[in-house]
Length: 234
Image (cartoon, rainbow, N blue to C red):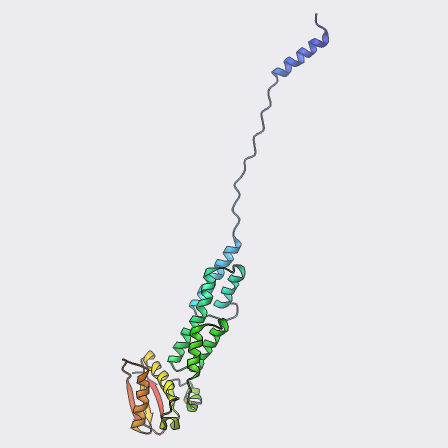
């Protein structure tokens, strides 16, 4: 006979061998994380879209906070190397130069210079703006034209000419007359020239023609005490 203690140990061993082996608990299923929205990229895209719309509408520097300049700068404050914003900023001074050329061709020298000064405020070294402004600064508009009473009454189609400058065939009249000719061509208008003598009227017409090589400037030359040019629809 085995001692009781040995029998108990054998019985415990037998029970342990028959006990089920515990299964490892399954690992928790990892759920796929939703991608976080890129708020920075969304903000940049929104600003760029608004900037392009402002540029297309010629809202270049006004109104405040809703113009191309402010919007492109807002993009660069977030992303200084943004190619589209940097390219857009370079377009703004060039757009002002285009607007200035158009205004000058229509004889609006003051407006043309204003556009160029705005361009140089943005880019002080902009070569096209500096060149054109220097050229326009040399245009000596006669005093009679600066105080043109017809234009003060919103008649933008009437241009007075300084009688003394006309009598002397002053060179200061050349660019002034040529700018009027450019406007006549752009808007398809007739140039009705009034001058004290036929010779003076023909001289005015000749100076205008010099600005339009190959273009037939239509109009009429009439005798009148006060020299002037009236642009009229055909």
